[in-house]
Amino acid sequence: MTTGTSFWDTDVWSLVLTLAILLGAMMLANTLRRTIKPLRRMMIPSSVIGGFIVLAVSFIYKQITGNPLVSVSTLEILTYHGLGLGFAAMALRPVRKVKAGGGAVGFNAGCTVVSGYLLQGFVGLVITVGLYSIIGGFPAAGLLLPMGYGQGPGQAYNWGHNYETIDYGSGLFANGTSFGLTIAAAGFIAASVGGIIYLNVMRRRGAFSGRTGDDYKEEYRIETFTGSNEVPLSESLDKLTIQLALVLISYAVAYLFMEGSDLIIQTGVLGDFGYNTVRSLIWGFNFLFGTVFALLVKRFMNFGRMKGFIKREYANDFMLSRISGFMFDMMVVASIAAIRLEAFAESEFVVPLLCICVIGAAATYLYLAFVTKKVFADYRDEAFLALYGMMTGTASTGVILLREADPKFVTPASDDLVYHQPWAIVFGFPMLLLLGYVARSLTWTFITLGLITLLFAGMELIIFRKYIFKKKK
Image 1: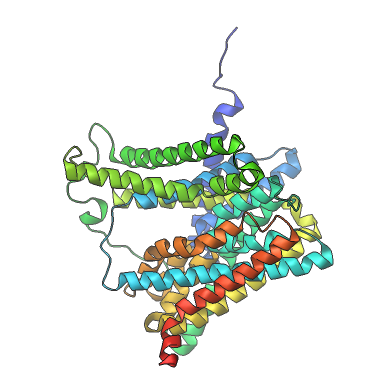
Image 2: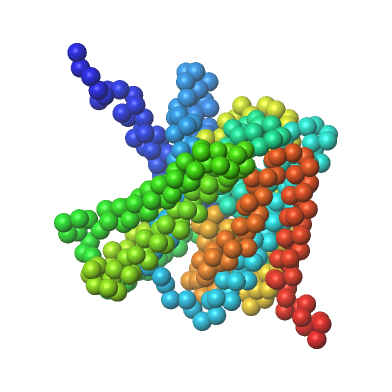
């Protein structure tokens, strides 16, 4: 009698087959995108198209066989960890030299991004609170709009899942995970539609004469792939193996920190506040802790080189960027494939979702069109495309839209996508904390709505400080 795992067991192959299906769908989507002109001109990322392909095929497969094509829990795990691993890889990249004025550009962009989050949160909560009195539902669901549009599929999943599985005080949010993931998926469509509309506006003004979705050529030099004093591409340990090791070690240390924090919560010292609020904040911000400990790992390696016990540069910017790109692509395709279509049969799910996605996209578009015209006057079009793409999809979506108007990244708009992050974390953290309170009761939902309004007003004072102080003078 044999014991242990047999190679023919389904569990041995399930993860490999799931990855093959997701990656195969992205390859098919990329082929369709390159061969079908209307699809290419929509500028929807291949990972998004691939996610919808898997979602459709999974639905048909289940109707025929009665069994799921891929495990939803596996897809949700890939979504959750894809976000954390992608941010860890980004944080490990060697520090680049900031262009002149980059700090100021990053500050303005960071404030604009956070202000956009707050606007999305305000719009979302007004809609769901208003609909709650008419058709019912989950009044705090509106705060998932900035998570799905502004933060992307990872955070949309994290908090949608939290509201579905944790009772903060106002009950559980049925199908909360699918609600958040659907907002994130709709965000990519909103980015495409809004980007095309804006490019046509530019065309009427004579500021754009190209064709949307055209392929572009990249030019690389040897410095793109490797820097001075880096480890060889292939020695006793492959260079890619080293990059993956750094990412996974950083993320594992972040896990140990979160697990240690959870052990403190389990002692009961924080009471219900620890179980209901702090725990979900800690595990929901896995990407933030992954970023922090990746930065600490990078700082340790820099310290080691300065002291002489580390001789070479181990982190490679090009490979770490490719790893983060892979993780984010996997996160996107898995998140869309994990949407449960059964939830769309309920009016309490569909009506708020439709209102949030449409009105949220329109509000984001109009707000950024106004702000970029005033604050980023020297490159308003490029700034709008970059920020709007990021505020409805991901940073990669922002790059896709920006490339249409600025293919060589001459304007500071590409720097905005990089240098805004520290300021966005600092100014955006108060709103992230409110995620643990908004679902406690209807009263807390109104309190959160009021606080978001105050925070938005404060951010507007910072963004338009130049005009305000000029008028006072």
